[in-house]
Image 1: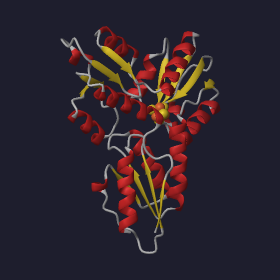
Image 2: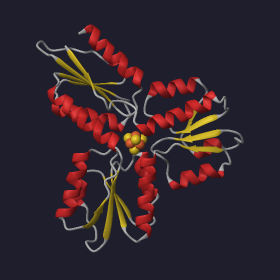
Image 3: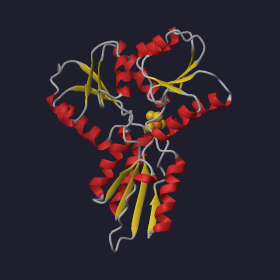
Image 4: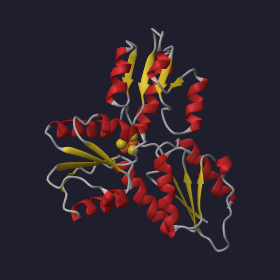
Length: 283
Ligand code: F3S
């Protein structure tokens, strides 16, 4: 049985940086470490941090009365308003927003200042998109799918700048753009899908297309992992979505000779290795 582990499986650059930032603070023996929201969508990592005393907050009000502490902002960033409120607490704020997300904030801020309307292609309730939207200085719209692009009823004279959520599916993004073009909107496209996502998705698709069984490892609440699962499942009907090795009830069909493994951006290396070892030794 051949086992292929995707090269682009697991933590991306931005997540690695954010997680390392929190561990660095623990090592420095800093007290009262908070993360604004879970640092990544992985219960195991978040659980480990909690054991080491790191607390997750969901709202700035939870910091009321605290005079000494550190708050780490996670890789997909926060809204402009939350950022300001955090700064106003007087606590030490470490901004681990991924530079690729910051770039989108900058584009949205600058382009909307020039009077252009902004369209964000992504999931409207995702904190990254909420953050991006908050940087617009004028009209801003969120389009979640090609269907919503088809239903978009905007002014054809307006100049729009289209950006995307970093983890959006590349094919769906292209489809969405095509619809805006076909409907004669005046659009400027800035493809802000992160390379890490693109590479991870195309590689996963390539492996799934030739694999008899595909395993996608990712957090239950991680949207990029779920997207990865969708992409693989479309190519390989025996695709498993697991969070850890414990979830894996693997059945290898007779005659199968290739198992592919990939993982979402929030999956730690040791979990990927565990799964890989298990498959290699047991099948
Ligand atoms: Fe950054 Fe891309 Fe990861 S935007 S957080 S490196 S998926």
